[in-house]
Length: 360
Image 1: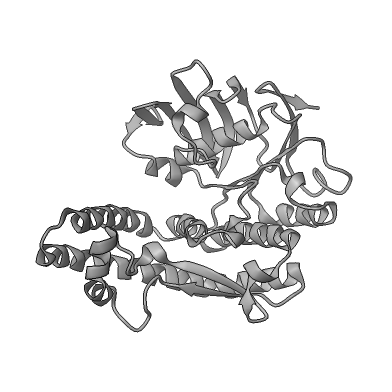
Image 2: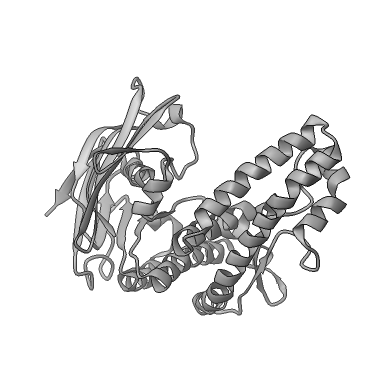
Protein backbone atom coordinates (compact mmCIF):
# COMPACT_ATOMS: atom_id res chain seq x y z
CA UNK A 1 0.00 0.00 0.00
CA UNK A 2 1.06 3.60 -0.48
CA UNK A 3 -0.26 7.12 -0.27
CA UNK A 4 -0.94 8.61 -3.72
CA UNK A 5 -2.07 11.99 -2.41
CA UNK A 6 -2.37 13.59 1.00
CA UNK A 7 -3.93 16.84 2.25
CA UNK A 8 -3.19 18.20 5.73
CA UNK A 9 -4.91 21.13 7.44
CA UNK A 10 -4.19 22.90 10.73
CA UNK A 11 -1.49 20.66 12.16
CA UNK A 12 1.03 22.84 14.00
CA UNK A 13 2.41 25.38 11.48
CA UNK A 14 0.58 23.84 8.51
CA UNK A 15 -2.45 25.85 7.46
CA UNK A 16 -3.15 23.77 4.37
CA UNK A 17 -0.76 21.57 2.38
CA UNK A 18 -1.32 18.94 -0.29
CA UNK A 19 1.16 16.94 -2.32
CA UNK A 20 1.51 13.79 -4.39
CA UNK A 21 4.33 11.67 -2.96
CA UNK A 22 6.45 9.16 -4.79
CA UNK A 23 5.65 5.48 -4.39
CA UNK A 24 9.27 4.97 -3.33
CA UNK A 25 11.48 7.53 -1.58
CA UNK A 26 10.31 11.00 -0.56
CA UNK A 27 12.78 13.49 0.93
CA UNK A 28 11.34 16.45 2.86
CA UNK A 29 14.03 19.11 3.06
CA UNK A 30 13.86 22.43 4.88
CA UNK A 31 15.16 24.53 7.74
CA UNK A 32 14.41 23.74 11.37
CA UNK A 33 10.87 24.80 12.19
CA UNK A 34 9.76 24.76 8.55
CA UNK A 35 7.11 22.09 9.11
CA UNK A 36 8.84 18.87 8.04
CA UNK A 37 8.00 16.99 11.23
CA UNK A 38 4.46 18.37 11.13
CA UNK A 39 3.98 16.85 7.69
CA UNK A 40 5.17 13.49 9.00
CA UNK A 41 2.81 13.85 11.96
CA UNK A 42 -0.02 14.41 9.49
CA UNK A 43 0.84 11.23 7.59
CA UNK A 44 1.06 9.28 10.85
CA UNK A 45 -2.26 10.78 11.96
CA UNK A 46 -3.91 9.41 8.83
CA UNK A 47 -2.94 5.87 9.82
CA UNK A 48 -3.34 6.08 13.60
CA UNK A 49 -5.66 8.94 14.51
CA UNK A 50 -2.95 10.45 16.73
CA UNK A 51 0.53 11.97 16.56
CA UNK A 52 3.67 9.90 17.09
CA UNK A 53 4.73 12.62 19.55
CA UNK A 54 1.90 11.52 21.88
CA UNK A 55 0.71 15.09 22.40
CA UNK A 56 -2.74 16.32 23.29
CA UNK A 57 -5.02 17.90 20.70
CA UNK A 58 -4.35 21.47 21.87
CA UNK A 59 -0.63 21.05 21.20
CA UNK A 60 -1.15 19.52 17.77
CA UNK A 61 -3.80 21.78 16.25
CA UNK A 62 -2.65 25.03 14.61
CA UNK A 63 -2.90 27.99 16.96
CA UNK A 64 -6.25 29.72 16.78
CA UNK A 65 -7.97 26.82 14.99
CA UNK A 66 -10.61 24.47 16.38
CA UNK A 67 -10.31 21.55 13.98
CA UNK A 68 -7.54 19.69 12.15
CA UNK A 69 -7.92 17.22 9.32
CA UNK A 70 -5.96 14.82 7.15
CA UNK A 71 -7.26 13.18 3.98
CA UNK A 72 -5.46 10.81 1.67
CA UNK A 73 -5.83 8.52 -1.29
CA UNK A 74 -4.40 5.07 -0.55
CA UNK A 75 -3.39 2.70 -3.34
CA UNK A 76 -2.60 -1.01 -3.22
CA UNK A 77 -2.30 -2.66 -6.63
CA UNK A 78 -5.49 -1.88 -8.53
CA UNK A 79 -7.36 -1.03 -5.34
CA UNK A 80 -7.85 2.62 -4.34
CA UNK A 81 -9.47 4.07 -1.25
CA UNK A 82 -10.13 7.54 0.13
CA UNK A 83 -9.64 7.82 3.88
CA UNK A 84 -9.67 10.82 6.17
CA UNK A 85 -9.96 12.01 9.73
CA UNK A 86 -11.22 15.28 11.15
CA UNK A 87 -10.47 15.99 14.79
CA UNK A 88 -11.81 18.52 17.29
CA UNK A 89 -10.99 18.85 20.97
CA UNK A 90 -13.89 16.68 22.13
CA UNK A 91 -14.98 14.88 18.98
CA UNK A 92 -13.80 13.49 15.69
CA UNK A 93 -15.00 12.06 12.41
CA UNK A 94 -13.49 9.31 10.27
CA UNK A 95 -14.43 8.88 6.63
CA UNK A 96 -13.66 5.91 4.38
CA UNK A 97 -14.75 6.06 0.74
CA UNK A 98 -17.47 8.56 1.53
CA UNK A 99 -18.86 6.66 4.52
CA UNK A 100 -18.51 7.38 8.23
CA UNK A 101 -16.41 4.90 10.24
CA UNK A 102 -16.57 4.29 13.97
CA UNK A 103 -12.97 3.93 15.13
CA UNK A 104 -9.31 4.50 14.32
CA UNK A 105 -9.04 0.76 13.70
CA UNK A 106 -10.27 1.19 10.14
CA UNK A 107 -7.48 3.70 9.46
CA UNK A 108 -4.82 1.25 10.65
CA UNK A 109 -6.36 -1.51 8.55
CA UNK A 110 -6.25 0.60 5.40
CA UNK A 111 -2.81 2.12 6.01
CA UNK A 112 0.12 0.60 7.92
CA UNK A 113 2.29 3.51 9.06
CA UNK A 114 5.46 3.20 11.16
CA UNK A 115 7.58 6.10 12.39
CA UNK A 116 11.13 6.51 13.67
CA UNK A 117 11.90 9.89 15.23
CA UNK A 118 14.20 11.54 17.79
CA UNK A 119 13.48 9.78 21.07
CA UNK A 120 12.61 6.45 19.42
CA UNK A 121 15.91 5.10 20.68
CA UNK A 122 13.74 4.35 23.73
CA UNK A 123 13.25 1.06 21.90
CA UNK A 124 16.61 0.23 23.44
CA UNK A 125 17.01 2.54 26.44
CA UNK A 126 13.40 2.97 27.49
CA UNK A 127 10.88 0.97 29.54
CA UNK A 128 9.11 -2.13 28.28
CA UNK A 129 6.09 -0.21 26.99
CA UNK A 130 8.11 1.13 24.04
CA UNK A 131 9.05 -2.37 22.89
CA UNK A 132 5.52 -3.65 23.59
CA UNK A 133 4.10 -0.93 21.35
CA UNK A 134 6.35 -2.02 18.49
CA UNK A 135 5.37 -5.65 19.10
CA UNK A 136 1.67 -4.75 19.22
CA UNK A 137 1.93 -2.72 15.98
CA UNK A 138 3.57 -5.67 14.26
CA UNK A 139 1.08 -8.24 15.57
CA UNK A 140 -1.87 -6.02 14.63
CA UNK A 141 -0.79 -6.12 11.00
CA UNK A 142 0.30 -9.77 10.75
CA UNK A 143 -2.36 -11.51 12.90
CA UNK A 144 -6.00 -10.70 12.01
CA UNK A 145 -7.32 -11.72 15.46
CA UNK A 146 -4.81 -9.71 17.42
CA UNK A 147 -6.34 -6.23 17.21
CA UNK A 148 -9.83 -7.14 18.47
CA UNK A 149 -8.33 -9.42 21.14
CA UNK A 150 -6.00 -6.70 22.39
CA UNK A 151 -8.79 -4.13 22.53
CA UNK A 152 -10.98 -6.48 24.59
CA UNK A 153 -8.14 -7.25 26.97
CA UNK A 154 -7.20 -3.58 27.39
CA UNK A 155 -10.79 -2.62 28.21
CA UNK A 156 -11.17 -5.61 30.52
CA UNK A 157 -7.96 -4.74 32.33
CA UNK A 158 -9.20 -1.19 32.82
CA UNK A 159 -12.36 -2.55 34.42
CA UNK A 160 -10.42 -5.00 36.60
CA UNK A 161 -8.30 -2.13 37.87
CA UNK A 162 -11.45 -0.18 38.66
CA UNK A 163 -12.77 -3.15 40.64
CA UNK A 164 -9.48 -3.37 42.56
CA UNK A 165 -9.85 0.27 43.59
CA UNK A 166 -13.55 0.01 44.39
CA UNK A 167 -13.20 -2.29 47.39
CA UNK A 168 -15.58 -4.89 45.87
CA UNK A 169 -15.51 -8.39 47.33
CA UNK A 170 -12.79 -10.69 46.06
CA UNK A 171 -15.24 -13.21 44.64
CA UNK A 172 -16.49 -10.58 42.18
CA UNK A 173 -12.94 -9.64 41.20
CA UNK A 174 -11.88 -13.26 40.75
CA UNK A 175 -14.95 -14.07 38.68
CA UNK A 176 -14.25 -11.10 36.41
CA UNK A 177 -10.59 -12.04 36.16
CA UNK A 178 -11.03 -15.61 34.90
CA UNK A 179 -12.22 -14.77 31.38
CA UNK A 180 -9.81 -11.86 31.13
CA UNK A 181 -6.87 -14.07 32.08
CA UNK A 182 -7.82 -16.50 29.30
CA UNK A 183 -7.67 -13.66 26.78
CA UNK A 184 -4.31 -12.62 28.22
CA UNK A 185 -3.03 -16.14 27.60
CA UNK A 186 -4.22 -15.94 23.99
CA UNK A 187 -2.36 -12.65 23.52
CA UNK A 188 0.78 -14.29 24.85
CA UNK A 189 0.48 -17.26 22.48
CA UNK A 190 0.09 -15.01 19.43
CA UNK A 191 3.05 -12.88 20.53
CA UNK A 192 5.18 -15.92 21.28
CA UNK A 193 4.55 -17.48 17.88
CA UNK A 194 5.44 -14.28 16.04
CA UNK A 195 8.48 -13.55 18.21
CA UNK A 196 9.81 -17.09 17.73
CA UNK A 197 10.13 -16.19 14.03
CA UNK A 198 11.12 -12.54 14.42
CA UNK A 199 13.74 -12.59 17.17
CA UNK A 200 16.38 -14.97 15.74
CA UNK A 201 16.24 -13.13 12.43
CA UNK A 202 16.51 -9.62 13.94
CA UNK A 203 19.24 -10.82 16.33
CA UNK A 204 21.37 -11.72 13.30
CA UNK A 205 20.68 -8.32 11.74
CA UNK A 206 21.62 -6.49 14.95
CA UNK A 207 24.76 -8.56 15.46
CA UNK A 208 25.91 -7.77 11.94
CA UNK A 209 25.16 -4.05 12.21
CA UNK A 210 26.83 -3.64 15.63
CA UNK A 211 29.62 -6.13 15.01
CA UNK A 212 28.97 -7.85 18.34
CA UNK A 213 26.70 -10.73 19.37
CA UNK A 214 23.15 -9.64 20.20
CA UNK A 215 20.44 -11.90 21.60
CA UNK A 216 16.75 -11.21 22.15
CA UNK A 217 14.36 -12.83 24.62
CA UNK A 218 10.60 -12.40 24.70
CA UNK A 219 9.17 -12.25 28.22
CA UNK A 220 5.44 -12.78 28.61
CA UNK A 221 4.96 -10.51 31.64
CA UNK A 222 4.32 -13.16 34.31
CA UNK A 223 5.93 -16.34 35.62
CA UNK A 224 6.25 -18.84 32.78
CA UNK A 225 5.57 -21.78 35.10
CA UNK A 226 2.07 -20.57 36.06
CA UNK A 227 -1.16 -19.68 34.33
CA UNK A 228 -2.19 -16.02 34.40
CA UNK A 229 -5.37 -16.74 36.40
CA UNK A 230 -3.26 -18.38 39.13
CA UNK A 231 -0.82 -15.47 39.16
CA UNK A 232 -3.67 -12.99 39.58
CA UNK A 233 -5.27 -15.05 42.33
CA UNK A 234 -2.00 -15.29 44.26
CA UNK A 235 -1.30 -11.59 43.78
CA UNK A 236 -4.79 -10.30 44.48
CA UNK A 237 -4.00 -8.74 47.87
CA UNK A 238 -1.00 -6.89 46.43
CA UNK A 239 -3.04 -5.73 43.41
CA UNK A 240 -5.77 -4.42 45.74
CA UNK A 241 -3.19 -2.51 47.76
CA UNK A 242 -1.68 -0.83 44.69
CA UNK A 243 -5.03 -0.36 42.93
CA UNK A 244 -3.97 -1.87 39.61
CA UNK A 245 -2.90 -5.19 38.13
CA UNK A 246 0.80 -5.25 38.85
CA UNK A 247 1.13 -8.97 39.56
CA UNK A 248 1.64 -9.74 35.89
CA UNK A 249 0.01 -9.98 32.49
CA UNK A 250 0.61 -9.23 28.82
CA UNK A 251 0.57 -5.52 29.67
CA UNK A 252 3.93 -6.13 31.39
CA UNK A 253 5.56 -8.12 28.57
CA UNK A 254 8.94 -7.10 27.20
CA UNK A 255 11.68 -7.96 24.73
CA UNK A 256 15.08 -8.12 26.41
CA UNK A 257 18.18 -7.33 24.33
CA UNK A 258 21.51 -8.57 25.63
CA UNK A 259 25.11 -8.70 24.48
CA UNK A 260 27.89 -10.76 26.03
CA UNK A 261 25.65 -11.68 28.95
CA UNK A 262 24.58 -8.12 29.89
CA UNK A 263 21.67 -5.87 28.96
CA UNK A 264 22.35 -3.88 25.79
CA UNK A 265 21.21 -0.71 27.55
CA UNK A 266 24.18 -1.10 29.90
CA UNK A 267 26.75 -2.08 27.28
CA UNK A 268 26.14 -0.11 24.09
CA UNK A 269 27.41 3.40 23.39
CA UNK A 270 24.91 6.11 22.54
CA UNK A 271 25.72 5.79 18.85
CA UNK A 272 25.37 2.02 18.96
CA UNK A 273 22.08 2.40 20.79
CA UNK A 274 20.66 4.68 18.11
CA UNK A 275 21.73 2.25 15.41
CA UNK A 276 20.29 -0.73 17.31
CA UNK A 277 16.93 0.95 17.86
CA UNK A 278 16.67 1.92 14.19
CA UNK A 279 17.56 -1.62 13.12
CA UNK A 280 14.90 -2.98 15.48
CA UNK A 281 12.29 -0.64 14.00
CA UNK A 282 13.25 -1.40 10.39
CA UNK A 283 13.34 -5.09 11.25
CA UNK A 284 9.68 -4.96 12.26
CA UNK A 285 8.86 -3.16 9.00
CA UNK A 286 10.71 -5.81 7.00
CA UNK A 287 9.10 -8.68 8.93
CA UNK A 288 5.67 -7.24 8.17
CA UNK A 289 6.25 -7.54 4.43
CA UNK A 290 7.82 -10.99 4.73
CA UNK A 291 4.80 -12.31 6.62
CA UNK A 292 2.00 -10.55 4.71
CA UNK A 293 3.42 -9.24 1.44
CA UNK A 294 2.00 -5.81 2.28
CA UNK A 295 3.89 -2.58 1.86
CA UNK A 296 3.95 -0.04 4.68
CA UNK A 297 4.48 3.70 4.86
CA UNK A 298 7.75 4.39 6.69
CA UNK A 299 8.43 7.78 8.30
CA UNK A 300 11.98 8.73 9.33
CA UNK A 301 12.16 12.11 11.06
CA UNK A 302 15.34 14.18 11.28
CA UNK A 303 17.39 11.19 10.28
CA UNK A 304 20.66 13.04 9.77
CA UNK A 305 20.80 14.01 13.45
CA UNK A 306 20.27 10.43 14.59
CA UNK A 307 22.87 8.58 12.51
CA UNK A 308 26.42 9.38 11.45
CA UNK A 309 27.31 9.87 7.78
CA UNK A 310 28.80 6.40 7.29
CA UNK A 311 25.77 4.57 8.65
CA UNK A 312 23.50 6.94 6.72
CA UNK A 313 25.08 5.71 3.50
CA UNK A 314 24.67 2.09 4.61
CA UNK A 315 21.04 2.83 5.48
CA UNK A 316 20.37 4.04 1.94
CA UNK A 317 20.89 0.53 0.57
CA UNK A 318 18.75 -0.94 3.35
CA UNK A 319 15.88 1.40 2.54
CA UNK A 320 16.04 0.57 -1.15
CA UNK A 321 15.69 -3.12 -0.30
CA UNK A 322 12.64 -2.59 1.93
CA UNK A 323 10.27 -1.94 -0.96
CA UNK A 324 8.06 0.35 1.12
CA UNK A 325 6.98 3.95 0.59
CA UNK A 326 9.43 6.06 2.59
CA UNK A 327 9.34 9.65 3.85
CA UNK A 328 12.54 11.15 5.29
CA UNK A 329 12.87 14.63 6.77
CA UNK A 330 16.26 16.38 6.68
CA UNK A 331 17.56 19.90 7.11
CA UNK A 332 19.69 19.70 3.96
CA UNK A 333 19.75 17.35 0.95
CA UNK A 334 21.82 14.23 1.61
CA UNK A 335 25.25 13.77 0.12
CA UNK A 336 26.23 11.60 -2.79
CA UNK A 337 25.39 7.93 -2.43
CA UNK A 338 22.13 8.53 -0.60
CA UNK A 339 18.80 9.23 -2.21
CA UNK A 340 17.70 8.58 -5.74
CA UNK A 341 20.27 5.93 -6.67
CA UNK A 342 18.53 2.56 -6.86
CA UNK A 343 15.02 3.84 -6.15
CA UNK A 344 12.62 3.36 -9.03
CA UNK A 345 10.55 6.32 -7.88
CA UNK A 346 12.09 9.25 -6.02
CA UNK A 347 11.01 12.81 -5.25
CA UNK A 348 12.40 15.63 -3.16
CA UNK A 349 10.18 18.30 -1.62
CA UNK A 350 11.16 21.64 -0.14
CA UNK A 351 9.23 22.58 2.99
CA UNK A 352 8.87 26.20 4.14
CA UNK A 353 6.36 27.59 6.63
CA UNK A 354 4.30 24.42 6.31
CA UNK A 355 4.11 24.66 2.53
CA UNK A 356 5.39 21.92 0.22
CA UNK A 357 6.89 22.31 -3.26
CA UNK A 358 8.62 19.64 -5.31
CA UNK A 359 12.29 20.15 -6.14
CA UNK A 360 12.69 19.31 -9.83
